[in-house]
Length: 276
Image (cartoon, rainbow, N blue to C red; front, top):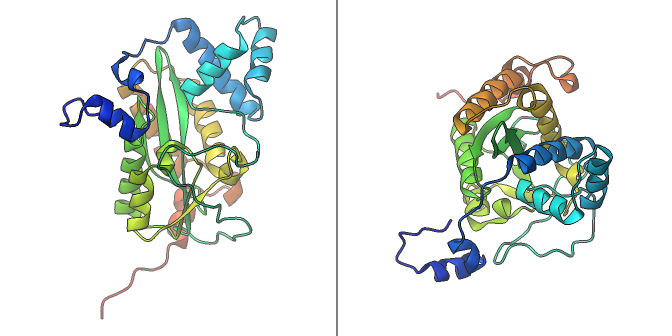
């Protein structure tokens, strides 16, 4: 988001984006091998116990012989972009200048492709580092419509994923996300509004509002990410792309009675209009 070649001063850019000026000038420190190993284990525990916060995760790690303080666990969770998931009062504030939207899907029957899309970001561990993955998912078919891998959690790669999904698959009536700063950013919400798409956002920490994407994370991590220690970002991107192709076209889905997301998607798309 910060453009060092822009005519605006770095301090001005930082102020407009609502970030501390010190973070603009400070060079990021590489993550140690020890922390990477702990982050990998935190990721696994978070999938199993999404309600666990830094205190509980710290205790779980200690029981496994990993000596780590709660503050350090909290720091690593923040770096990974995860938090304990449970419904709380809406007391948190969105990023400066970012608007949040109400949750629109309660009691809504999703009965066709392109009725509701959802997007989310997850942490992907590698052999010597990590990346972030965003996926745009069709709720009805559970089909992954587009995805992007990034080394940062800025909004750009999320916007690119949505742009690809819109260009290839039409557009949904409703788009659901959590209240993360990437999804409340003007670039992201503006793209949806420009396409006359209704915006729905989960309650703060309400993981069940976007449960289908959460299930995808569990599937892709246990069936691909954790069994392949990718060395580079390019390898991770290739691995994830290969798996998502299999997920869409080759992996039977229990919710669909053994049919694949592709089969459900194409079987339920409305017929194309034929010109007279």
